[in-house]
Image (cartoon, helix red, strand yellow):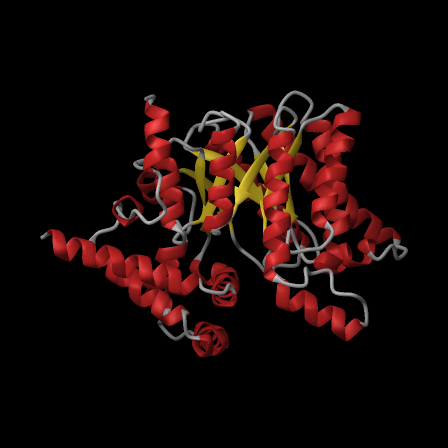
Length: 398
């Protein structure tokens, strides 16, 4: 039996020894109590305004935030500050996606600085092969309201046209830099009412920079009814126009907001009718990418164990190598370690999104993640049960 076949047979997302190998008993206890807190919908509702208030009036809570939620879900405040966390992941064959997670800025100076910081992650990736991808959030490079206006096909003023051209140039600078340095880059998804213009920009960048290999990846949120069709249409464009399609497959992060806005504005919700429909389209998207793997590079960005198993089983049945260069798994730092580390131990290409930035500046990101975490049915409970299982295993072993 080959080593790879042995590893496949041993792959189990229940293996907490592998999942938490990098955590001390103290780390495990901290994670347990953190997820206990996150399991409270009340705390995730009132926590953000209370914390923002405390930070804004100068109460000394930054140290508490840094030692709890920040340390668990973020790599550090700077790229260099992330190196110990990068080392920890690399010890278990997991790569890093440096994710500059400052949100809520809306000035041209801030957008330029975000662009420059992303370029610094690209520069760092050229010196450290453990950095699997760079990534950027489009609204970190331009005003949400401008994306919204363009998406609605409303006329722009001369100043707005110039502003949009600056956004396009920031996209271009990042993607071209990644192309020149052979660093893959992920373009994150946003709300549906600004996503069309982002998709247009992503396709433009892929047509320019994915001629020889998959460098630029767009994100497909499969909790939307139309995104499986979008993926298929983009593949056919890539095939016709002669470029490689880069696809990050996710379920999505804005479900409640999307449904509320659709109801308020009187248009059909773009969101799938139920979780089963989302899961079905996600797994169909995996199948589609595998069917066209010669021209598609894709990342399964998921915390869903069933979909991860679908991809593993399909790769095995198609006799694709575990480390196929066009297939990647990804999870967020501090979550679903049972997926990340067990997949990596079995030889698959795995990376963790590693948010970083000044503590106060990344709080909007952390609050959003905490609220998303409680909205995913069973996610927090699953994290808690796995941690409890590992604590019991360690206690029994002693």
